[in-house]
Image (cartoon, rainbow, N blue to C red):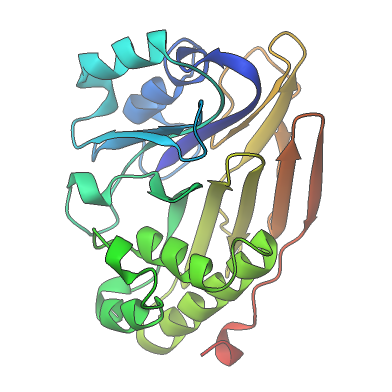
Length: 264
């Protein structure tokens, strides 16, 4: 399993989430506490929004803790909306194209989780990606496939509906051609204006997900694990939830993908 963190609010330096906290994302890459894989060393990435609609993107295959360029970048770049990810592969190769976040146009996306037995139905998953988006298929992960399928399901029009449909379609393949656990997902995505997050699984082991409003930063942090142990106001996102974060509020509603047996 991977670890990730996202932020929406008044502009801050990326290091305030990625490297400075006591349990920052870089620290989680070496010692995560709320997942089965405490070390996340199969690459990292950051997507951030600035002066243009499309996000900036920096990804590499090195462990996050060993890349001095990452620490330099997060100490200098300030953004009001960004996402960062450290990867623990569930089977696909360690390559830059397999590192999160993924970006297409103004959209960015990252995922923690898996579709059980993905290697057994990867070709079938690729068939679900519309021709319009298939040129963006650069890597081999289930996460990138999920993102591109969701774009084809209408991510621009209705992010929640698109993610429900995409998770249902890929979950049906995992049920028919893969193995348990069929679906586990904690995702973050953004169109450059809002930050969306979801937590879902087909069993009772949904990946961890938390959020917190900071009065000092005037922003939302959405994370796989709390960034500080002495902050008691981190709120766990319930399993089966879809969150929409805006500058001054959050809306959390039930998230219900199509039943796996009916989503083919």
